[in-house]
Length: 132
Image 1 (spheres, rainbow, N blue to C red):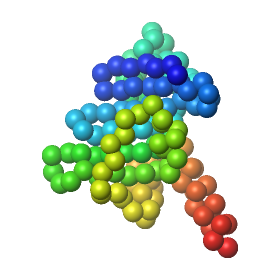
Image 2 (image 1 turned 90 degrees about the vertical axis):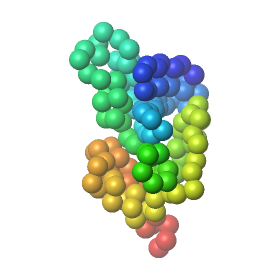
Image 3 (image 1 turned 60 degrees about the horizontal axis):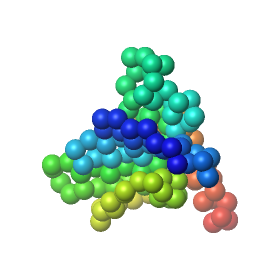
C-alpha cells in the first residue's frame, strides 16, 4: 500500500485491490472516499496548485462518514456497505448511532456529489432486483 498524508487528510493506493481511498478528518469527524488515480497523484505535488487536498478528495465517492461533534452523540452514516473492505487501512471507530437507510438516502440526495448519488441509485436498483 502507498500512502500520502497531510494536515487533516490521508490517502491510500492499495495495489492488490487496485483502488484509491482517502480520509478527511477534523476534530472527531471523519469521512472516507473512494478517489481516482488523478486525485491521488495530485495530492502533495506542485500540480495541486491552489486546490485544497480535502476539496480534491471530496470529489470522490463518499463511502462512510462519522460525525462526533460537541453537540449530541456520535453518529455514523454508511454510504457503501463495503467501506471497511475498501478502506482496510483505516482505523474506523464505529459508534452505536447509525443513520437509517432512508436517512442515508436523504443525505445523499441533499449533499452527495454525482459519484455518490450514482452509486446510491445503483444500490437501490440492485435491492429492487433482489427483492423481486
